[in-house]
Image (cartoon, rainbow, N blue to C red; front, side, top):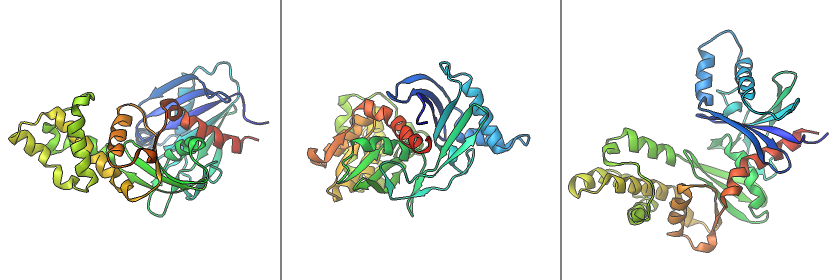
Length: 317
């Protein structure tokens, strides 16, 4: 039978929910809707009631949101879900796939669930090593693998709340490390004693020097000894809170990226927006240009859909 003309992409993370109706060939998004009911909040609502079992509770929410999605006349459809829906706080837990993981995604474990007589949901596992886990980023990595060398080693960087550095070799993802860069930045900037000394502000080239000063300290593994200097500089040297914001960003990004100096592999950066500029600045400060590849925004934006389509093709015959 093969893949239908359209499929529904579900990206259900810890904090947010997104559904998209997608053209299977072009991957054009035909309609889309989002909510802030992430898996964590939905699970809390589930545990606060006793009338429905877990699959029914999550399934009912999916069906309610599908009614808000313009399905363009589709009568029967497949829904491909990635992210936290297969976690211990999701609809049904699936065990993690142990790395190595082929670029094709064929090693991931999947399970079909019937939500009603019109909707079949393909639930897919996350991936793990002996020391780390991820759910969702592996699908994005599989989508980006079309642009990675099949016969070489490299490192794929997926910056975010929990940044992933995924090492690959010979067409397989071999290992990865998670860095809590985004979450630490949020906690330190809003909840620590340093919060009064930083102020969020849009990026300007005028902040480059202070950002790079932070990168240098972080990459040299001096971030722990440098954090409190943010408050001290505010009090003693009257450093502005806006400058401190980017100094803190540089410290944490530098600490995340510093170990990349030790290897010789090419680094592939997949992030959009201001994070793209900041990570590029940091990488270029200590790596030669020939070791850095930055993906175009369009490639990054469609990576999850490419990965979901690859997986769906394995299960739709």
